[in-house]
Amino acid sequence: MKEIIESLIGIEDRVHKVYERAAMQLKDDKEFADFFWRLAEDEKVHYNFMCKAAELIRGD
Image 1 (spheres, rainbow, N blue to C red):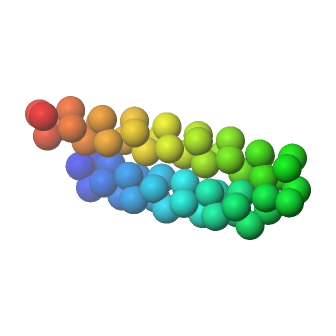
Image 2 (cartoon, rainbow, N blue to C red):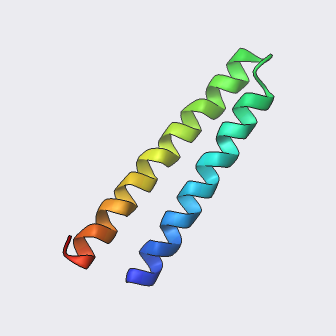
């Protein structure tokens, strides 16, 4: 389980960064950029959930 969560943490972080870069690249198209900013925020929330799960499993 620990390995799965650690893997998910990395995936969520990378996806968050990809969506942020997409939003920045598309800044001239506000509607599309906003869409990617929302996706980036969703991934950030998922990342934080996975980090919390990792803490709980470690007993922190």
